[in-house]
Image 1 (cartoon, rainbow over the protein chains, first blue to last red):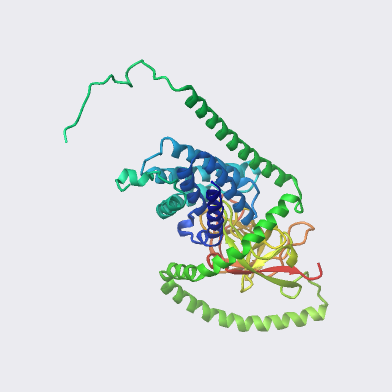
Image 2: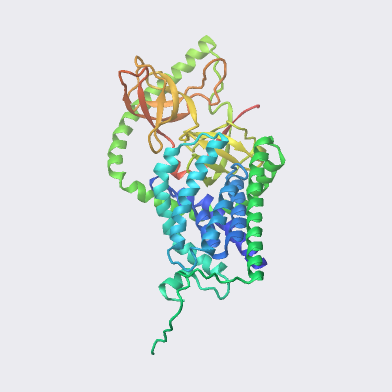
Amino acid sequence: MLADVVKAGIAFFVAVVLQTAIVSTFEPGNGTADLVLVTLTAVALLRGAVFGACVGFYAGFLLDAANLGTLGFSSLLLTLIGYWIGRYGETTGRDRAHAPLLAIVVVTVLYAVGSLALHYLLGDPVSARSGLVEALPVAILLNLVITIPVYALCRRIFARPGARPAMDVEFGTG
Amino acid sequence: MPRNRTLRLAALGSTVQRAASPGYSSSRAANALRRRIIAGVLVALSLALITGYFRESETGALHDVQGVVAEALQPFQVGAERVARPFQDAYGWLAGFFHAKSENERLKAENRLLRVQLTQNATAAQENLELRDAIRFSAGPSFPRDYDQVGARVTANNPSDFREELGISAGREDGLRIYDPVVDADGRLVGHISKVSDSTALVTLLTDASFSVAGLDVQTRTYGLVTHGQGSGEALIFDLVPKEDVVRKRDIIVTAGRRGGELPSLYPQGLVIGTVTAVGQFDVDVNKTIQIEPAADFSSLSTVWVLVRKGR
C-alpha cells in the first residue's frame, strides 16, 4: 500500500507539471486535453473509490497550487470524481473494455460543468460559452485520445497483482 | 468435449433468497461506511480550504503554503517547458504555415506603408518634444521611461478553460504587485498581474472576459474601452465609441493612459493593444461596433515583461 501511495504521489506530481507546462499550451480549436483528469480516472478505475478520492484531493491541491488558483477548488471536484469513478470501477465498470473511454467522456463533461458551477458560486467572471460550447467537444476528443496510452501506463504501474485488467478480459488477451 | 448440463432452479426468478453469511454482510457494510467517511472528510477538507483561502488575506497561512508548493513545482515546470519548446514551436509553425502565403502579401503591403509612416512619425515626435519643452508640458507616467521591466518565464498556460491566464516565474520578491501591466518582448500589452506569491504570479490575459482597459485609436485620437468580445477566440471589442467618432479598419489601438473620473490609469499610455479588424454600427445602438485583433501572440509566449513603476 505504501508503495502505491509513493507511486501515486510521483505520478500525479509529474502529471500536474506536464499539464501546466506543456499539455495546456496545445489548444486546437480552443480546447485542451486534461492529463490530470485522465490519469485520475485511470487510477480510480484500477484502484477503487477510496484510493481515487485520496489521489483526487492530492492532485487537485497540486493543481491549485501550481496555477495559483483557489485552494480546494480542484481538490473538491477531483475528490468527487475520483470517488465516483472508483465506485464505477468497483461495480458496473469492472471487466469492461469500454469503461475507461466511457468514464472519461462522462467526467470531462461533469468536470467542466462542475468547474463552471463552482466558479459561478465563488463569484468569478467566467464564460460558459467558451468553457462548455467551444472548448468542451475538443477537450472530450483530446481526452479520449490520451486515455488509451495513459490507461495502459497506469495499468502497468497501479494494477493489483493477479487482477485481470478490464481491456484484456474483454478482448481475450488476459 | 461434451457439455454437462444439469437442470437447475432459475435462481433469478425464484422468490427464494440466498442467505448471506453474517460476517460477510457486516464487513461489507463496514467497508461502505469507511469509504463514505473518507470521501466525506476529503470533501469537507476541500470546502474548508476554499473557505479559509477566501477569508484570509494575501499573506495568510494558506497563501504561504500555496506559494511554497508553487515554488517547489516551478523548476520542474520550467524544465518541462524548455524540453517541450521545440515541439511547441513546431506546432505553432505548422499551424501558421497554412496562412503564411496570404499573410506574406499582406505584410509586404503593410511594410511599405509603415516605412512611410515611420519617417513621418519621427519628424512629428521631434516636433512634439520641441513643443512640449516650449510650453513646459507635464504628462503622466510614460513607458519605458518611468517603469522598470521585470522579465519572467511563462511556467503555466491557461490553467482553466474558463479563464485566460498565465503562470509566470516572478513574484512579490521581484517587486511585482497586483494590476502591474504585463507586455511581450515587443512591448505589446499581454495583460496584468492578478495574483502574486513570493516567487510566482498569475497574469490575467487581455483576452480574458474580466479584462478591460481604456484604449485610444492612434490615428483618429478616439477613446474607448477595450474588452473581451462576445464571440469566440481572442477577438476584442473597442466599446463605448459614439457613432459620430471616427475609427477605421486597420487603425492601431493603444492604451489611453487614463481612466474614468479622478482615478489614474493602471497602464502607461501607448502600449499597443491591437489593430481594428471591423467597424460597424446598428440603427438602434448608441455606439459603434468595433472589433480588434490583439497585437500580442498569446499562443507562443514563453517570456513576458512586467512593468514595475519606478520609485513605488
